[in-house]
Structure formats: C-alpha cells, structure tokens
Length: 142
Image 1 (cartoon, one colour):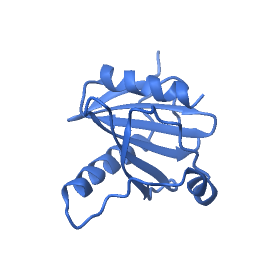
Image 2 (cartoon, one colour; image 1 turned 135 degrees about the horizontal axis):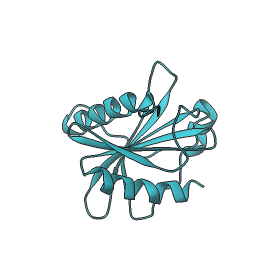
Image 3 (spheres, helix red, strand yellow; image 1 turned 135 degrees about the vertical axis):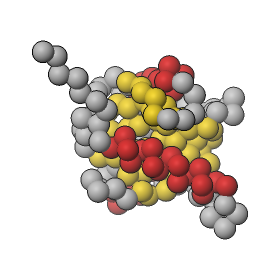
Image 4 (spheres, helix red, strand yellow; image 1 turned 90 degrees about the vertical axis):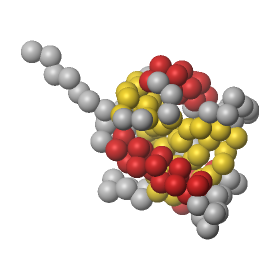
C-alpha cells in the first residue's frame, strides 16, 4: 500500500497570499512596496529571501501572517510579463528539496525547500511552466 503525500499545508497560505497580492495590485488605495531590505527582513523574521533572476522585477513585498508564523510574499514580473508571487517562510514544512508543482483552480504552485526555508511560487500558467520558473529560483537559492 503506497501512501500518497499531498502538498505541504503552507501551500494554502501561498495561494491566499497570491490572491491578496493581486487584489492589492488592482486597488489604487493600496500602495505597492517594491523596494525591500533583505537583511532587515532576515533580522526581523529570520526569513532568508532567495536571489532573484536579474531580469525579474519585484512589484510588491509584504509580510504575510499565517497560523504557522510569518511569511514574506513578493509579487514578481518576468521580462516576458508573466506575473508570479513568491511565498517564503521559515521551516521545512514538508516541502521537497526539488520543486514539485500542482494545479489548484486557476493557479499553479511549485513548492520546494532549501535548508530551513520553504518556498512556493504561484502563477497562472500550467504546472510545468511554473515548475520551470521555480527550478531557476531553486538553483539560485542553493
């Protein structure tokens, strides 16, 4: 009998944070905060953000509360104009070391971990496309 393990519980938080980031982007009264200090974030939250590809643009960075502790959500845009959010939190959280992707409704989520940091990249493309972008991030966070 094989036991099938689903995605880690933090994926629900990653999806919720992606939807909130999209709402913020569409609201004139919610100013986006694209600048951030990775060292300050690490000192305050113990969350280490991965290096991003140089051709990706950060459009918003927010601290996101979860039942399992704080997370950082970065809204990102690739040079091709694809929109993603990167959810980063401390802890293994059941994520594999190599990105794995699933489809959840209108969104795909690729999730993985490096050391004691767990990541989820959420986008509107298919799981293979989001997984390919996550592979790039996973290589930079090694």
